Length: 248
Image (cartoon, rainbow, N blue to C red; front, side, top):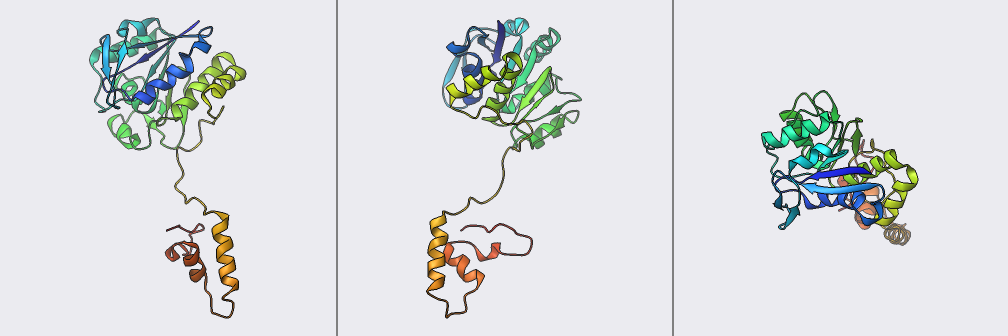
């Protein structure tokens, strides 16, 4: 039985905490994993979503864990000295330490990311790098597995990392089974970029309408800008070096 303990810090991101709970703590996985939630002090822990969750265990639970998961939290202040020491002790005991989203800040505060590659939510990556220059922050990946320490990018990237860990622990079929239950992609490479800033293509019907309109105006001096305007694309997007038009 692989023991997973999630550490809910003050104002934990509820979705981030729900990810390991669904992957490791679901009833279907009880033959493989045990799952518990701990906090600096047992009891109610506020979330960023306006409600609180009940942490049944204190920091001692980390000391017997095989995997420790730290979900994101806000604001990104350093955890208490007791929390940092408990994380260091868990790692020293051989626990695999994992962060989801901004949970990486807690691992960095505990010194567990020193000299390592790590990632976090792209909006917080520069802050992580500034606060902890000894960490090599990569904001362009979904997750980074460093063996004893793994980090994931924002929100749903935590699903990808947790499934990756299941794949390492119990094989592809176990991870695929969980993905089917959660109705998510069974595998995304950790090196995949977090997001892509590009326009979504317009429906094909829109271009068909523009083609029909152009045929009706063949006797007129139609320009690319004219057709782009009819199709709803910004003419300014058709400039040298811009291979994709920008839709209005």
